[in-house]
Amino acid sequence: MIVVMKVKATAKEISDVIARIKSDGYEAHLSEGEERTIIGVVGESPTPLREENYATMDGVDKVVRISVPYKLASRQFHPSDSLVPLNGAQMGGNKVLVIAGPCSVESREQIIETACAVKEAGATALRGGAFKPRTSPYSFQGHGEKGLQWMAEARERTGLPVVTEVMDPALVPLVCQYADVLQIGARNMQNFALLNAVGESQHTILLKRGMSSTVEDLLMSAEYILAHGNKRVMLCERGIRTFEKATRNTFDLNAIPVLKALTHLPVLADPSHAVGLWEYVESVSRSAVAAGADGLIIEVHPKPDEALSDGRQSLKPDRFKSLMQQVRRVAEAVDRTA
Ligand code: PEP
Ligand code: MN
Image 1 (cartoon, rainbow, N blue to C red):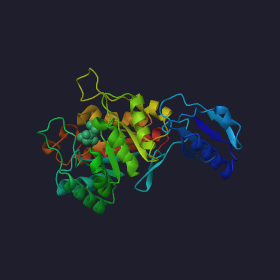
Image 2: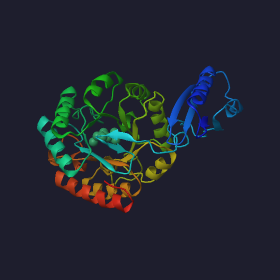
Image 3: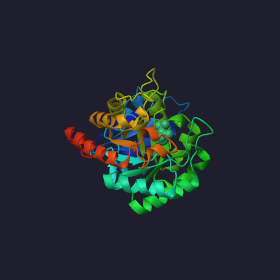
Image 4: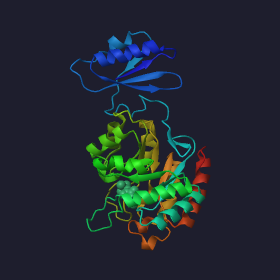
């Protein structure tokens, strides 16, 4: 249920509604829009929620039942787009922001070289994995904390904030020390202990869609993070598993406008993991921006042939530069910038 306050509701009227929600045994989450405040009522309580008890309170415009199971993530609760600050810009705003970098942080030189190249091409943030979720236990697992240190050094050199994956709830405090954005990978989208831990961290989160998860599953996972009062959540479509074998995954282009309609959270696309082949990354990136994606996350490697992970889908820096130019043109065509 959400309680929509009147445009001119006073602070006292708002706090009275919150007090009532708490005395009924629920949690109150505030969405303060430019015009009005919306209060989300969430949680479980033996006291049934009676709409009329709230609808008659001073300052209340209306009470709306939210029919979808995700509440805080829904557009009903927060009608305007949520903006997530990133490097002086805002993900979810008019400018399409691009996060780029290698799949894995492989060496100090590799991450610094890549960071300088993507920065020059116009990227807003640097990606790179230090803790890697690999299908095989024998594949390169990442350099761990050393990798995080190299990324932090690359940030110092370029000013680019760092986006990196965390896989273990116990490592959230460590990764928070180095990273600006914690990535939850596709394989961990429903690791609820991890979602709770990153929710509590209050760090900015990039939540990727699980490869066999529905849009609703993704939004329910976002809800876990939001339920901790952490509002800085970005979603990412990264391709799903289908019968199609020509590409690594199947990019669900539909998910972009569908998510934009259902949620206020910024929506990114990861064409690199979606197609898995660098030669298709540019066209899928263009389509994602045309469909309304707020941002892209792109794998870039100076020497893809020597990459320790995902070389086949990684763009060389000059290709990435050309991609950025294309993204700018498509963004303009849909009344945005990049
Ligand atoms: C990655 O970003 O390198 C990654 C492993 O992505 P995903 O979790 O989407 O597979
Ligand atoms: Mn990768």
